[in-house]
Image 1: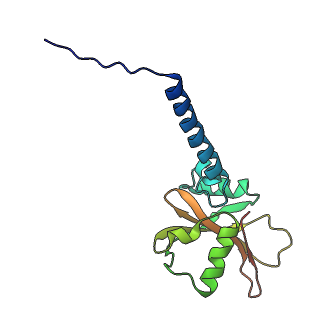
Image 2: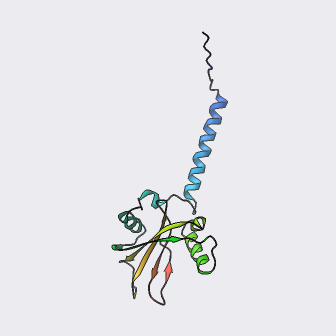
Length: 153
């Protein structure tokens, strides 16, 4: 019976190449993590699949919300953004969400009454869009006829 074994020798050149590849992968991960459209953020550190997690997510952004006011809907994000939806998609991009990449897909929309909004004449809501266990967009808005809307962050 013959047994063949092959021994891999690690030369200095091979070791340097391996170290360079690992360093490049680590740099790419750091660059992707710090980019505005990065899919990793607070929602990956907080489980937003529960109401408590979504409230905690809002708290991390500085908002206090009443969990008892939660409203949930399944919504379809349009494939093509036009008019008001184009503006809304741009608002999401400004705050670092890649909302447009979810065009044509369904997600959950959660709304809560904000309890710590400074000087508001009416009810203020926080809205979160959640897909695959992460926040993909959201806003703070007023329910008044002459209301406002701005980013979560």
